[in-house]
Amino acid sequence: EPAGDTIEARAAVLWVHVGGFTSGDKSEMETMCRYYAARGYVAIAINYRLVNSGDRQNLGATYAGSDTQAAIRWLRTQASALRIDTSKIALCGNSSGGYAVLGAAYDQSLKVHNPNNPGIPYNVAACVDVSGRLYNLPSLEHGEAPMLIHHGMQDLRVPFAYALQLESAAFTAGVVCETNYYPQSGHTVMRSETDDIMAVSLDFLYRHMIEE
Image 1 (tube, helix red, strand yellow):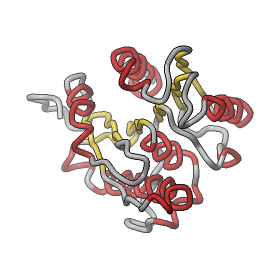
Image 2 (cartoon, helix red, strand yellow; image 1 turned 30 degrees about the horizontal axis):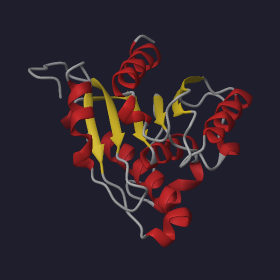
Image 3 (tube, one colour; image 1 turned 90 degrees about the vertical axis):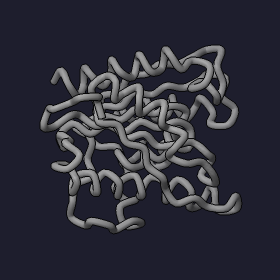
């Protein structure tokens, strides 16, 4: 939380960690969370169910996305204690975390895979994806949260074509989509372009979640 903060309800940013769905931990997001807390947000990092390498493609993104949805529902049940404005919750994730936040924000079929706090909404106000992918592109619907896509054009692990497909699908569905592509960067763009990604993301969240 912002140091010395006394405001009753702040916008919240939920960060989801990397790890290829087989490893990683929320503690790795401490720097990101402190960055946003210093700028007025309540910042949260979560864990999600990990899978073995053989289940990476079948269950990894499903569990990560559905557990992120469950985390949003839980946050709404704790909004008073955490002093969160439930109309201003944003998702941010890198790599497998990008898959998780895109799935959580735009794929309603995932909700059955983690039924905790049923009936509580899991919609968000904005979504920031770094080097991720949305498997279920037809699930995008008009009026859903605006998204920001960061992607390295030399990415071989999550090919740049997936970012272009997502951008096109968002345009077709009428979902607000902004893009930030790096011609010389690969999958580790979050590492090589950290300062720019954080600044662009902060501006995006302010315009779509705070200013409005």
